[in-house]
Image 1 (cartoon, helix red, strand yellow):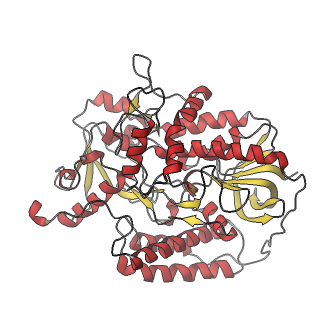
Image 2 (spheres, one colour):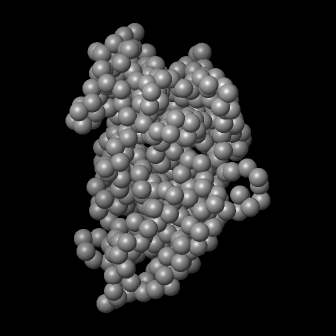
Image 3 (cartoon, helix red, strand yellow):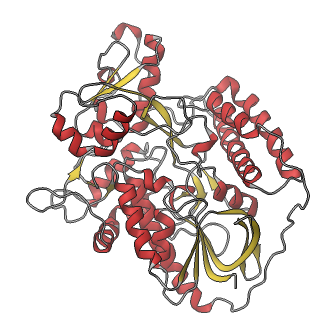
Length: 505
């Protein structure tokens, strides 16, 4: 009863859209780690970028902006696919009922965000991700060939002669499920840092499992720190102040209430995210203060409330009125450009294993993701993965060869505090501008933790699975970063400009 043609780990946009595009003849299982809407897709505020019935825009312009933001490290073939097929998936989302905002003339309202040279971001106010996620959920739930398991923790996976076996913890019981094909759509790694905009499930589980299977992992040190996370470090999950707020004219200001981006980049507040984050760190060093603000109070209050209803409400809940008050912000871990290496059909280096969304590395983002390209990437490449599986499934084996997992019966729980240690190490060694002097020390500490978790025998529960995933992810990131620093005089992910001299002030 637990045999499926395809198992999809992850119920965000990539997982659900992949399930939607799979043939109705295939028996599909979608696994959600927690409740169905708890995922990074649901948190996406800005929108989905793409050229769709936009006569003034073009895929070539979109590609140019993507390359500039990505430091020209983007994969050309994958980026061509992304920008040229955007119209397919934006059109499909509209067909499925996604309610993107429109102007008075009935045309879609396309907003502007940092790094974009054209208004090309389709959005649903400031909660686009949630609108897309709920639209896809309503659609996929109606499909007779798709089963969804909610609150199910994938503990491990194994390659078998007929495909894959997964060990899961569901309703307090261990369950094994088998498939001929597998799609990892497990999202990001935000919880490897002390402060992140990511949801609680973003612990890099899919990347860690693929790594243990022998899949190639690429550019995991390419981490995006969003420059305008709400600066309230009382909780690890920081509320994001969307890129679109700057796109609608908000100013970045320092501790003295002064605009400062003119000293760092001619694009000012609309520079790409890595440039703005680095600029804030340079400005913090110059002023000796980490107090920074986003100011949109010069705009019409009614426009602000209508354009950003979710952000407005969330800020009001903590005593800030964005129509009259500056918003405290500071860079925070937000997105991962690297991940499980895949080709333009989301195929990993393991036969019949696919990866989509943030856990994958298609190469479209280069070393810095252009705003609102993430939702687009999730849809384009999960659709292509489904198309490839649909073709291969015609000759797939009929039998299943399950793997027997060691359940670590009666084993002790892992020692307390590993996840806290890992977060502190990453925050200290690899935040915005890497702390080169601490990289080796951090790597040694993480290696010790990973060795204990990999070689020890502990109860297989959520703490163990997530700690092991975080340790694996941290190990890969710091190993890669240390190698880059050892081989080059430049720091990884450094901005395309140099810090200004003091005499420029």
